[in-house]
Length: 384
Image (cartoon, rainbow, N blue to C red; front, side):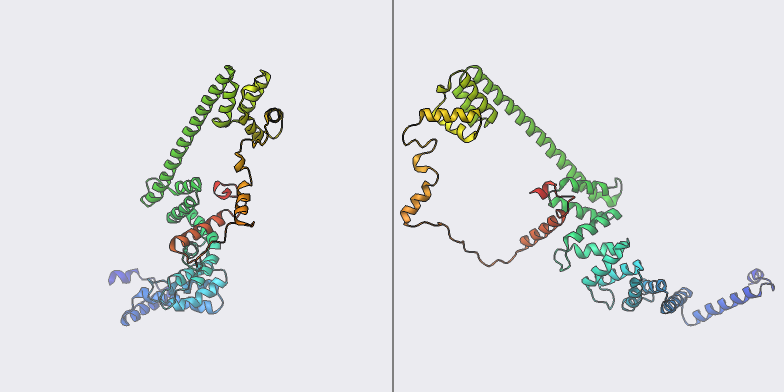
């Protein structure tokens, strides 16, 4: 006690002594009523904030609403907090909008869950970069079974939360783009969110690595296929060149038409046979194919000339006469004594969407949202 008294201020600081005495009285009064000093101070702070709010201070309204909606506070009253938070949110106190979004989304205390209200406050809060608001907005708009589901907004808020560092949002966003066959975009999102060495990044890093390995495997297989196609083409060209070198123009043209399916080779074989005066070595049916492949030019002229020279009465060209275009329809009309369509409208039972159909509809809406703007119009997914 003597030590404490020795530390009290001198008589020249009377006002400080008075404040100290008042403070000691408040502490003694609080203890006598069974109140902790911190609890009493918190209650006084709340009352002062409420008084300031009632006087028009919207920042004080926000503070009062935050205290009342804090589940750790002894003054917790979610329903009462709505009054102050709504006043503050209307005055663009963004944190109050975010807290309102959380309350309506979770349905805290006496406040019933209201996803429509949660979505409204969340969108407003996220506009002001409030993290709580952005996360509630994603949760509301990304729920495919909710009436509030909106693919465009879900993508936007997931992107915002991913940029904020929410790895679960990054994983969800990457999986959506993966489902849209935008594999490279999904990989980039996952790997950008990956923080090596961070335990919380384990899942997103693994997903990004999986997509990266998949892409590299596909690229390797595609390169192998391209090389195989080049090798096959080289082999076909070598065989064709050998047939021309042997002056076997009929075989060379047949090979070009039916094996390599090459217009340049067919043209080269026909012109080579014409220059060599060996068109007679080419079978009749090949000229009909040439006439179909070449609508104009020197090869078309050669084919027309050879067909005219070799044409016989009732010649149906490369077709069997019984199967010329339209013959099937004419036979059907003759057999049935009338013309018209042979098909009738199929029976379509009443349709009730099943769970896979609902999931497909959700994927389609994400795809429509992703492909709706000019930015992604030329992506492989949007061109299909």
